[in-house]
Structures are given as structure tokens and as C-alpha cells.
Image (cartoon, rainbow, N blue to C red; front, side, top):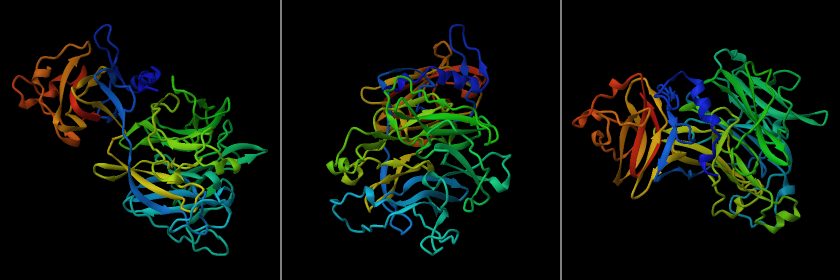
Length: 491
């Protein structure tokens, strides 16, 4: 689908979240984005485009961070969750081996270690930089008679135990870390809750479930939505036999609204096996998700048909402002690639989590080689905010925003151009008329590559200081050539 198909509801939600100023008669109300960073992953700020496009960027592989080869891990390990916790990066994942899925004709590779079949446990790893990871020997749980392992949970819900750090300021210290997982309740799957003071020692929050109106049979996402002051759960369900997601809300993590089915606009029905939803740490008003898309009718290895595990998977990218209306790109965000072992039914699952690993880099993690002895987790990177850009090729084009209420400060862009490319910005009133001193001919040409580039109109004859427009609804017109615009903010 084209991002143009995002339901109009998303922009109305953006405007409703913040105070709005009335523009000229006939113009839509101005969105008061304040000093928030805004990405171009949807059309919420886009008024019109001509000669440019929203371009989805693919992450770059950066190598393996974990091979699931320990005795308590194995070929069906996965469902990883990663988040930054102060100066520490935390990772949780399922350790599991099921040799019933192992293809007997698979050619052994260096480092292959076949782990005997065992049930799932929840494992923990940590890092100081998000790049090099260690498995601490925690001594918390017994596996094969030994506590020398990194297992933090081995009871019910170990199949899809999904922790997060609760950023709710009202959360007690004893419940600073929370998790959800699914269990069967009278042959019906339900979602249950866990809490921890340190992220390592866990207990059930209460005997009963917290959410009951889903299928929950993959990694479910729950988090504190600080922008709106509530908890949000994005969880797995089936509708008309198709794997999809629902969204429920809670003020206290215990009592939840009925789940609302996801709305993908005009996008075709596709199986979303996982969702990986998380507020983007630089723009938490935007929920980003990297679902694993499952194609059950395509099979790369004939042997998989005999094992009754047909299908292929890749990763896609989508975003939401409310957890219900989603802007979903049809093209793959994460492809199986050249490694033939990634062309199996449930490989290429993105971990839940997007973390900074440098001033101009963010990292995501992807499970690879699922069902093979080489089952592993790979790190991939993007430039900061680099999921989607407004992209102009040659000869160029332009994008004009919807009306924005400018409240003061500099305009800061995350942008990149070719050596021969550039960006010019015209500031218009809400009706689209150029404002004196900020016309296109007054605009400085921007070229280069920077995550934070401040636009300075004061150096151009005839221009005025941007601050003179404080309190004014404006449109930003970007005239671009061989350039990409990733995000903007007033600072």
C-alpha cells in the first residue's frame, strides 16, 4: 500500500492531542507540535507532495550478537525484547530447542551445535553499548541440575515472556519492571502479568489474567504510554483466519479496555505474526512497529512441507499515533537475504526494541536461521530517525506541510543531500501564501548530512529572524533535489 492510504483519523488524533490554533478560514486547524520531534513515517504532517516520495529505508546488517547454542537455548530460541535502561542495555529472549523442526538434510556449518530438545525458558543478556552482549551467570533457575546460566523465568508463559521497564512515575519500585505472557485458562489463551524490582527476579502480579480477548500466541507488546499517561497493550489475535493485532488501554495495568482491532486503511490482509510495537524513544508520541509478516502459502524448502511447517517470513514497518490506526508499508523492511537458512517459515523475526547505539545510529535486532542449529540474533542499524524520508531525486520536487502552530525556537532538520543536491525552505501562512522575509528566494540552501541541522534565515538578504513568527500557524515548503528529509522539530 501507499502511505497515502493512512486513515484521516490519524491526523485528527494528532491535532486532538495538543492545543490547536485556528488558521485562515477554509484551512485545517494548525497542529501545535511544540518542540516535539516529528518523523515522516506517516502523512500526519504532510499536506502535499510533488516530485518527491516517502521512501522506506532498509537497515544495514552489523553482525551476529548472540548464537543460541547454550544447553538451555537451541534452534527455536527467539522472541527477543531489547531496551535501554540507563547506562545498561537489557535483552530478554526465549531459550528453546525443538528438533522436530530441524531439517535432516540441512548441511552442517562451522559452529553448528545441536542442542537436545527441551521446553522454553526465559533468558537474559546485557550490554554496555548495545553491540557486545554477555550472558551473566545469575544462579536464579536450575537447568539440568545446574544454576550456572542466565535464565530468569522457567515457569508458565516462558514461551512468550515479554518484559519492559515501566516509566510510569507512579509505579512502585517493587514493580518497576513488568512483563506479560500467555497461558491457557480452561483451554482458552489469556494474557497474564508479572512484576519485578530488578528485572531479574519475577513474580505473578495476580492469579487471574489482565486481558482475555485475544489469541496471544506470539510476542505481545505492553508499555507505558507517557505521552497520554496510560498503559497500552498491542497483542496478537485472529480475524477471519488472518493473524492480526488488537490494542487495549489501561490506567493501572490491571483493568483494561476491550481490545480494538487494528485498522490498516486500504492495505491488503496479511498475516502479522508478531508486532514489536514500541514508542520511539526520540518521539514517543509515535508508536513504531516491526511485525514479522508470515506468508503461509510460500515454501522455499520442499522438506518443510513434509514437516508440516510451510511458509516464509520477512519483516515490515508500520507506525501509529493511537495503537489502532496504522500506516503500513507493503515493501519489506527486513528481507531474508542471501543466507538460505533465513528462507524458512518463522525466520527473520524482529526483536521488540529500538535503541540508540551512537549519536547518529540506532540499532534493531533480528532473529535469523530459525529451526537451524545456527539460530542466532543479528544487529542491524539505521541512521538516527532513518526509517522513512521525504526523498527527492533528480530533477527534484517539493513537499508542503499541513499548517503547524509555530511557538518559537529554531527549525532543526535531520537531512542528507548529495554533493550536488540541496534543500530550500519557504515558510507560508496557513493558506499557503509565502510570508515576506521567508519566501523561497530568501531561503538559504541547505546541503550536507546531519542528524541535527539548524536552519538560519538570518544570513540571507531580505530574510527575518524566525522568532518573529512565534504564535503563527505556518506551512513549511521544502523544495528538494537529490536529498532526504527524515525529521524536523522546533527547538
